[in-house]
Image 1 (cartoon, rainbow, N blue to C red):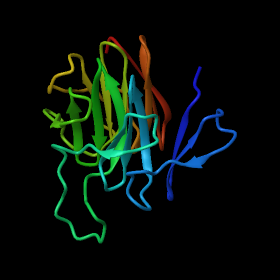
Image 2 (tube, rainbow, N blue to C red):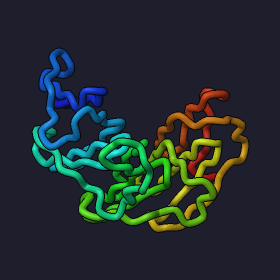
Image 3 (cartoon, rainbow, N blue to C red):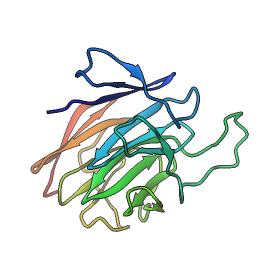
Image 4 (cartoon, one colour):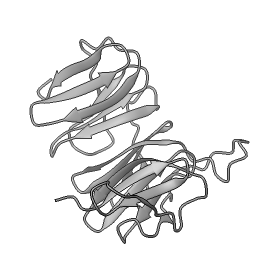
Length: 195
């Protein structure tokens, strides 16, 4: 049963302990006026991906947050923001490891976010906007229609675009039999796991 819920807003992280009936601010350690774009949990940890502050981790159900960006580049771009980490579009747990998809590619952590390694071998464009996984396969969706599959959790990706006609990848889900893609032009596409 899910007791805790988190929401990212323009005023930071909000938390509910009554299944979304009531919400309260939960920003201790989180950057001021920075919203979380995505959340993922694994036992004992809650991760939040942000617009320009990278990844944050909480070990107390979101009561306090700490930066977790070792290995993710802080880009030297003049933006007026405190940092310029690539926007984190999705976070996923795959075989107990963390995967972060960003507008500058994929990053992998095998130590619960203490360090990150680039994971972009064979990916043509690195604006990865969506991730989906089951126990044996990780699928990454790139902003301009490319879909990549990784069967082993290593740094080798296969491009899998057969039958895909969309322009913008919005989201995807995966189960044992297939991956379902939500995009701006074709709405839903399906890729069998055996493809």
